[in-house]
Amino acid sequence: MTAGFLIASAFLASAVEFVEALTIVLAAGITRGWRSALTGLGAATVALGAIVAALGPALTLVPISALRLVVGALLLAFGLQWLRKAILRASGYKPLHDEAAIFARELEEARTAQAEERAGLDWYGFTLAFKGVLLEGLEVAFIVVTFGSAQGRIDLAALGAGGALVLVVIVGVLVRAPLARVPENTLKFAVGVMLTTFGIFWATEGAGAHWPGDDASLPVVLAFVIALSAASVATLRRRRPAMVAA
Amino acid sequence: MNRVRAFGLFWWDFVVGDDWVAAAGIVVAIGITAILAAEKVAAWWFLPTAVAVVLAASLYREARNSR
Image 1 (tube, rainbow over the protein chains, first blue to last red):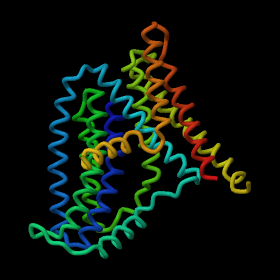
Image 2 (spheres, helix red, strand yellow):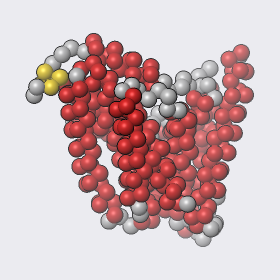
Image 3 (cartoon, one colour):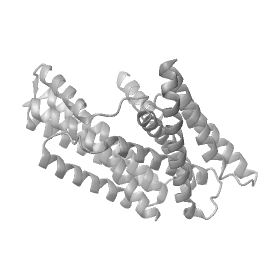
Image 4 (spheres, rainbow over the protein chains, first blue to last red):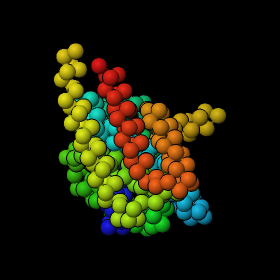
């Protein structure tokens, strides 16, 4: 159960980030040329690999309880951000994430940017792809390293993230357009729920408390976070018409 | 120096985001959980409860500000 939950969490969280990175690389490739965009993508991938290679083994040296405390706190702070935004989107307080609109804006900005050639590359296209992939990739690296290390199974988290990468790349190459049909808002909601669940679970254990039933309580924490989120969306939706009228 | 600042800002935005009060609330809640656990009190229930309170307060602030 925990292994499947770990792989699914890493897969979903990484898929969301890879979809966003794909949108940026597509915008850079279409407007500024594929050579610069793909070089930026490759350079960012190498940089990410170096960061994960340095961080992953270092984390195995930290005692597991201290690691779970820090990782749990980080995941909880990070997960609550996602969950809060997802609840605000679902209840109409924040506009929905629109990958097609983001793609159109990126295209426009890339088209109007000045041409500057460095090392035989269009520098704008290179840096746009590099920064986009590095920033989105850092989020994936953070998720894989934290999820995996707290559970002692970085391999399973990496498997989930790798599966998401392969799927997004295949679909991206086939479609050659931003993946606007991916239910990204729903995915982000699910990821926020999972990050918050893992954060609560590990931070509690890291703080020295013990869950009744150990790992068997994880689905109960998940159900609690889902119920809490659903109740928050319902409450905010009820409040909204009254606030608009006020 | 600007790069160091940008690096710090990136991680601040990445982990803490736009509601530092919620992040601070989580840190305090984890601290209280650790104190309860050290006193041999069953503390597993505290963090989920605190998360519910912190999330509700954060959503309330956001909803009120968007009026």
